[in-house]
Image 1: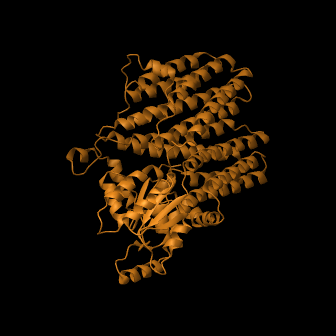
Image 2: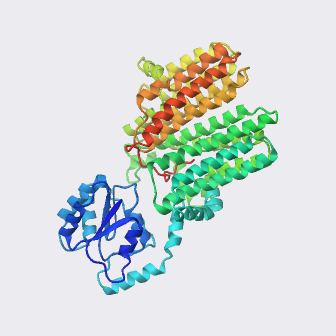
Image 3: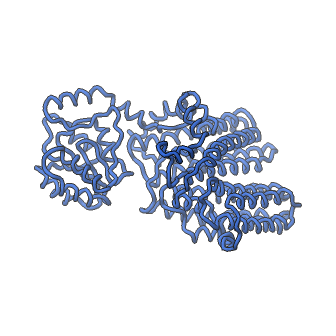
Length: 600
C-alpha cells in the first residue's frame, strides 16, 4: 500500500490525482505544510508515503520512476519525494525543518535529506518531463513538452538492459520487450515469467533427452524460447518497476539451473543413441562455473584504497596499459560488440547451444561449447591479469574479505592456516590445485595417492588463506580452488570403472556450484557470505575434495562409488538449499537487480 499527500488542490484539468492513483497511491490533499505533516502522521507505519507538489506537471512514468521503485528507501524528482517505511522518520524530520517559501516543499525536503547524509535516489528521466511550473506560461510549455514525447516508447526502451550482449540486444530485445509489456498488461509478475522460463527450459532438456532428431530440434527451439522469456522477466521488472529480492535470486539461480539441466538432457539423449557424453556435460559445467567465479572474483576484488586518479602521478603510473587499450577500443564502435561476443555471454552461448543441438550431435554441441568457453575464459582472464599486475594501489579490507568468503574455506584449511607456512597466497593455491589435479590424472585408478594429494591440497589451501588476500593477483585464489575441487571430481569419476559415476559426479558438482553461486549473490548484495556454520558443515572445498578422493580410493571399482557421490551430493544440496531459501525469502535479503554488468 502507498499514500501520496498533495501540497494543495491540483489545477482544473490536471491529471495528477488520476496518475498517482494508477500507480497504486491513495491520494490525499493537504491545505498547507502543517496539514501535510498531520496527514502523513495518520498514514499506517507499514505504507510507503510520498509528498507531491499540487502543481506537478509531467509524464506518469516520471512519477513511476521517482516514486515506486522498491529498491530505494528514499527517492525524489522535481516536485515529489517519497520514503519507504524504514526511512519515513527521516522524511518527516526533513519536512518539519523545511523553511517556508522558495522551492516546492518536496524539493526542499529532498535537499535537507541529502544535506543530512541520506542517500536520495534521483532517477534519470531523459526526455521525460517532471517539473513544477511557476505560472500559466510555464504550465502551458510543460504540457506541450509532455505531449510531444511518446511516453510508451520511452518506457519500452528503458525496459531493455542498458548493457547487454550482441545477440540479446539485436536478436531478442527488439521483440521481447513487447512480450514483457503484454505480460504487464495482463497482471503477470516477473517471478511468474521467470518460472515459465525455467519450465520451458526443463521441457527443452526433456526433449533433448529423447535422443531423436525431432527431439533435438524441439529442444533447440524451446531453449531459445526460454531465453526470450528470461529476457522478458527482467524487462517486465524494469517496465513496471516490479523489482523484488526474491525475483532477483530466482532469475540468477534459474539461469544456472536451466543451462545445467540442458547439459544433462544432452547427456541423456546421447546415451539413448549409445554415446556416453556425461564427461563432456560435466566438463562443460565445470568450465562454465569456474569461468563465472573468475568474473565474480575479479569484480569483488577490484576495489582499492586509492583508486587511480590521473591527477596524482603515482596513480597515473599505476594505470594499466590494458585498461588504456580497452578505453581506446571502446571509441571504435564495432570492437565493443566484438568483445562482448567473444566472451560468450548467456545470449550468444544459448544461441550456440540451441543451433548445434538442433543440427548436430550432443557430443559436438558440448565439445564446441567447452572450446568456446575456454577461449572466452582465457581472453577475459588474460586482460584482467594485465590490469592487475600494473596496479599499485592496495585492495580494500572489504574486498579482501569478499575474496576470503569466495574461497569457501572448510575446517581442514582453517586449521592448516594456523601453521607457519609463509607461502604467497597465489603460489600456495596454484601449487595445491596442481598437486591434487595432477595426482588424480596420473595415479592408478583406485590408488591412495589422490587422497594423499588431497590432504596436501588442504594444507596448501590453508596457507593460501592464512593472510588477507590483498596481493594484485590474489583474486585468482577462489577460481583456483573451484578448478581444483570440480576438476578432481571430474577426473576421478571419469577414470572410474563404475557405471553411473559420472552422472553422480554431475549431481555433486551441481549442488556445490549452487552453494558457490549463492555465496556470490549474497556478497554482491552486501549481505556477506553464508553462515560459517554452513560452510564448515558442508566441508569447505578442501574437505569435499578429500572426501571424494577417499571414496575413489575405497570404491572406484565398485558400485559404492556412485552411491557415495550421490549421498554427498544430496547432503550438500539439502544443507545449502535449506539455508539459501530461508535467507532469500527473509526480510534481511539484499534487494539485488541485474544491472551489475557481470557477464552471465
